Amino acid sequence: MNHLPKLIATLFLLSSIVMRAEDTASPPPNIILIFTDDQGYEDLGCYGATKIKTPNIDRMASEGTRLTSFYAQPVCGVSRAALMTGCYPIRIAEKKNIKNLHTEPSPQEVMIPQILKSAGYATAIIGKWHLGSRGKGPANFDPATMPNAKGFDYFYGTPVFNGFTARVEETKVRSPILRNQEVVVAAVENWDHITSDYTREALSWLEANRSRPFFLYLAHNMPHVPLGASENFKGKSAYGPYGDAIEEIDWSTGQILAKIKELGLDENTMVIYTSDNGPWIEPPGIPLDHSGSAQPYRGAKMSAWDGGSRVPCIVRWPGKIPAGKSSDEILSTMDLLPTFASLSGCKLPEQTFDGADASGFLTEKIPTSPRDEYLYYTATRITGVRSGRWKLVLPRPAKPADAGWWGRMIEAIPANQLYDLTADPGETKDLASQHPAIVAELMKRVERARGELGDFDRVGSGARFFDDGPKRPDMKVGKLPKKDADKKPASGEAETTEVPK
Image (cartoon, rainbow, N blue to C red; front, side):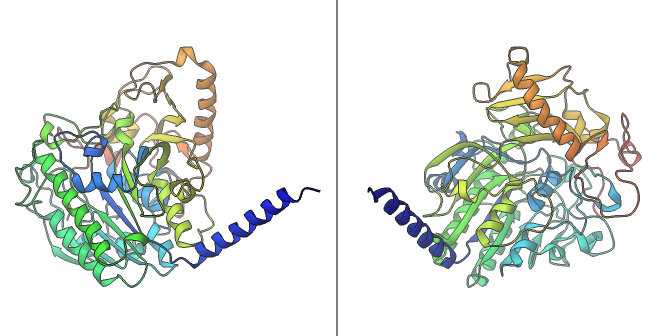
């Protein structure tokens, strides 16, 4: 009788038990998430930039895994909501049951730092928040919607974006800077030192929290306009002011990586570098040397093309995540929450998340991503879906009213369009008539999303609402909600005309 197969099976089982025991004995990893603002896909050397020099981030890519089909969302606040909650923004509950053009999550929504704190993590956000609601509190923001109430032990940064003009002096909009609940700068007049300030704060915080697992969310304001760069970088890049800002972020990233090595934490720290959306390209209001590049993808920030939401992403964790690897598997910022929870041993709340645990994929324990689709939303309107190499673009009017100021970047699409993103990343050749079966299969995904998440003209069965009253009372098909209709954005404006108080 041949006992060899049984012996092999027994040895495999024993080795699996030993591996699980080793995994259990390992301390939870530190996590550093570096999140830039309006940085295009091509704006790093390792993604194709030739005029912007990023040696530190390029080295990070050589020491980690570079993702080439990584998706955020097309606009700043919406993107941060998806990141922090692990959900499509249309699912997330907001105060008064409405949907804001910049998502303002309900205080009852659970976010990444709240989950990690349950595993004993120290948590900090240094940088831009942009998820708060107006109300009584520091800088006139409701404290229940600010970082310290959402699981962050420490906050230093801006509650909102920089502004919506190329230069600070071109608008009255000024953002404050807060340290926890204290306003330390009432109104930023110059953004030249914001990246160096954040880097100093980050290094100090890492030093102080070296003895326990930590989560650092370093959310740079750059390279969102108005741009800024300190003396060592200003006027140095061949790409102009935008390149100056990116090259200082590269320096900052090098400082962070050097610090974790100095502290002896390199092998137990996962570092992720990515952006919130594609580059803001809208001349003449935003000059081209103040804008990045989404090449080889079509579109930019606010658009429904891949250039609006596909962003660079590098993941580094020596000894755990493969070095020098590039993957075109689909992942998104929504997948980071369940991935962090899994790696830290945290249990997720009993609610629906749109993100999936990618820890096995990133560490090569499984060969493929857990994500098999990405849904494209413009505000509350679903505009397309990607699965594998195929992207279906849905019919839509030009400048849809339900998208408010965001809609000005949306062109009319008269009928379904189908693109092969592997062969045609620029979405130039419509193949819908050649592949009706693929269109039909992707439409099933769209209809499931409309039913579960919703659309501009319907409320999804899985959308969350915590307040009393009607659900999405601001939903007016074919016309703007009054609070947005009253606003008349200036040329080049993509955020809001409201002046922070």
